[in-house]
Image 1 (cartoon, rainbow, N blue to C red):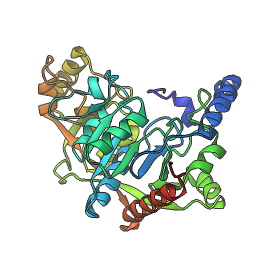
Image 2: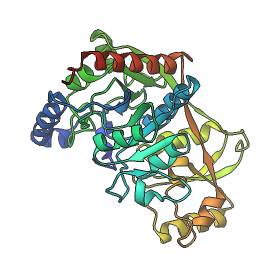
Image 3: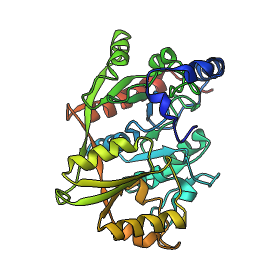
Length: 346
């Protein structure tokens, strides 16, 4: 999957999008057939998939964490399942945030592992079995909505209200991962993050298809101490401008920004440049939790950059505080129904 979306994906479709249309048509045919294939494997425990319509971040990881917290509040042991995008390991691995590095398991799994048992596996059926064997009684899958072979007991598609689905075109003409009709058909519900209007046409289409829509917003967990502080904000995520807006909302004064591709592994020169540039201008470094876990303290000045960077943590807060619990309950009920429908052996 593309890690750095071209800027034209997020503006009104122009000649670049239309020039790539034949490739998008072929991509859409394949993606749609993959989603609609009839035979899928079932997980040994209830499974929730948190996905999104498009390439790039919409808030899947903090949403998955919010659901895990709701599961724990009900006395369950949640487990996260991730492909480990950006990591190099090709074997089923239980993530240990104290010992693994982002180059090995990916950045998002390191964040998830701070919250609950996390397994990375490129073969998600195998990963689900590993989680169940380790005692997880509900699985929350971060991404994989368009491609996983597993049956979902609840599929929650996250959409950012500011970006929506960009120009609405399929990859490579735009950011959409599979035909919208296929995606809505296989979704259980949508989560709209934020209160902007870019996602509204899609929300209305989903509502006409009978899909519930949960409103939510991202909230900072900072202590307010950045107000009035001059900063150099740096980020290697899918939507760095969204992070920079969050920095401004803290009251910080952004003097300079540095953007890197999503899941970017920083070179020693890039690390040194950030540290030295901030020092010369007397600026405080600020970044995201996802970026800080990609720094490797044992290499060059990465430990210095990590120590000098203020991290702005983000949570997803549902407008209805009971909504995450309702999603957990719905997944449990769907799994029970699935087991009752399963053919009896013997």
